[in-house]
Length: 235
Image 1 (cartoon, rainbow, N blue to C red):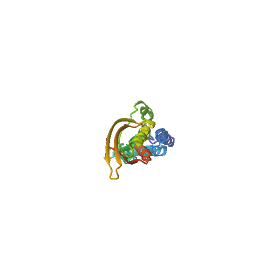
Image 2 (tube, one colour):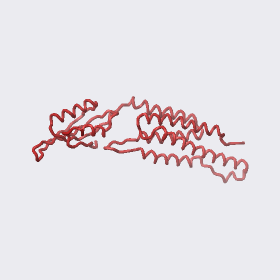
Image 3 (cartoon, rainbow, N blue to C red):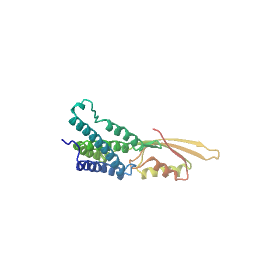
Image 4 (cartoon, one colour):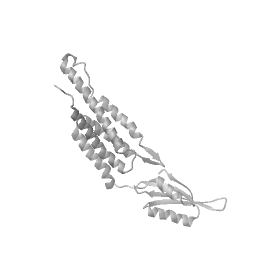
């Protein structure tokens, strides 16, 4: 009896891995994330190939045990050995997509999606088509739909030091209104500089729309010539 996979079934599994990962990677690429279609497809196909190799190892052991029954008690083919290495290996790859910038963590969802497509690749490679297809649909819905259903605005604290209170404070408030940034609280302080100029320090607690990031806010506000210093504060 031939237990080995045919060439057509191997090609089918690899193509299914490409389709499953391509859908998820396209979603990430449309949102301008670091890992796009190619990265997700390569991770998924790589995991699928390793699962196929693991399958072949098992089939080879089964062939030998069938032909030489007296070796059956000696042969071992651990189906989880190579697969376990994929899970840990992709963890290191996903960690490379996580960045911390201005107290803001980015890349967690992309890292999770890479880890997930590796799991989908393993499912396809092992022949669990139902698991792979259902998993792809669920992941695609989670990435696309849940963000719209559970809309949250991150809360940040930003410290702005500036001169010429009236015009600069008006500029800051106008910018917040234009970008739909909600001010939840503000602390105000003023100090006298040696040149008799007053230095105003405002600490704003703000809610930022999801399409904005803190680096853009800092860059936009720093364009005003009266702004002396600006930085994010850990909440």
